[in-house]
Image (tube, rainbow, N blue to C red; front, top):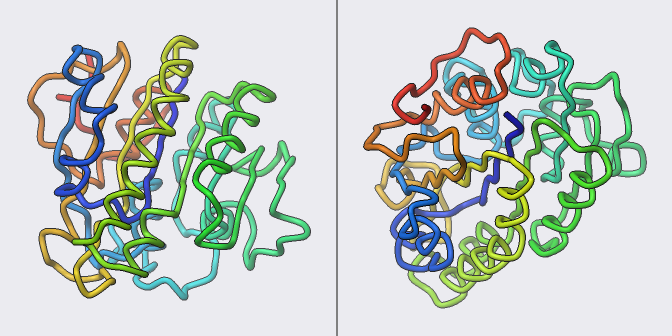
Length: 265
């Protein structure tokens, strides 16, 4: 089944639970479910993009801090999908391009990607943390309508940016999450109507020091919302390392990564 993965960068579970009214409304209507997920360590962005997309924790992938600029040493969802002849796309921060397409990122060449031979065939990659979330979703929808990808990654950064500027317990951080929830209310119904399975999660959370990277619950606990006919909506205890394999199961492609069977019908 076609799948969209939304990674809302820096979204802490405690604030997602309070602030994301639209997603909770879809869950209350029986069309989705919220789970709590514990991110791997260190609770940093590039290591956890790699973890989510390959199923390999940072201490095994070697991507253990944000300044490691190289291609991944592991196969990702994009690789598994391409090996099965599926179409891939991403509207995401440029570190994703550096992990799976080309490194280092050259904005003039890589920002708008149209490269059928690469793991991420079609992409809009941004490199400013304040690049508006609204634009990221519009970039993603453009890719979806134009290329009909089987797997689409959408990765906005404004929640994380607000957390680094203001901290966890602030109106700015909470309102950035509410804004993302509002954007999802615009796009999610259309994705579901088009037959996509949709996962909304985060790489890591945020703390009151305006940072993350450690083991505080607000840094490690992140939400996992699931929507679509393929999900059981039953109790489950998914792991962040199981997201790659679970999405490969949704895509019906061969893979060798752990998956959370309790999530899927």
